[in-house]
Image 1: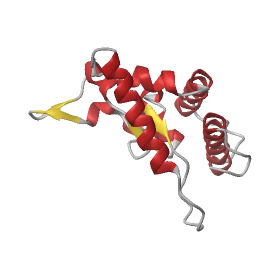
Image 2 (image 1 turned 180 degrees about the vertical axis):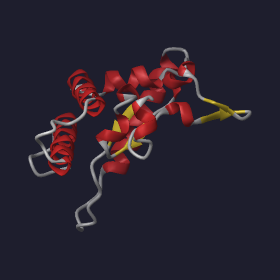
Image 3 (image 1 turned 30 degrees about the horizontal axis):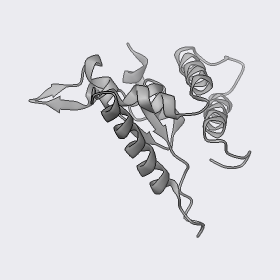
Image 4 (image 1 turned 180 degrees about the horizontal axis):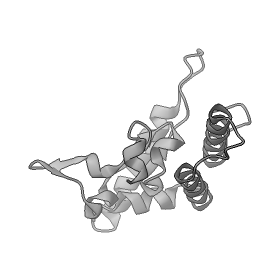
Length: 150
C-alpha cells in the first residue's frame, strides 16, 4: 500500500484532485498545480508544487503572508506567460523559491522516515515529535524563519 493512502489527512496527493469531466489529475496536470499550505508534511509528495506559508498566529501582528502569496503567484503566472503560457507553474515556482533544492532534500528525508517503522526502542509519541520537529526545521530553513517561528 502506498504511504499516501496511510496518511491521507497529512499527505496531499494530486491524484485526488478533480481535473474535469469526472476525471482525476494525472502527472501531466501536476505542473499546473500550486499547493499553498503551512504544513511541510502536506507537501512531501509534491514539493515542486508547494508555496509554503508561515502560520497565522492571530497575535495582533501584521499578517503579510497573503500579500507575499499573491505577489509570488502573480510572478509565476507572469513568468509562465513570458515563456509562452505553457502552464508549467511548478517550474517557475521552483525558480522563484530560494533554498528550494535543500527543502526538496529535507522533504524527501521526511518522506523516507515515514516509510520506515520507528525505532522500536523509541515510544511512538517521541518518534512523532521528532518527525514534526524535522518538518518545522525544514519550514524554517525554506522561509528563513527564526528558531521559534513557524
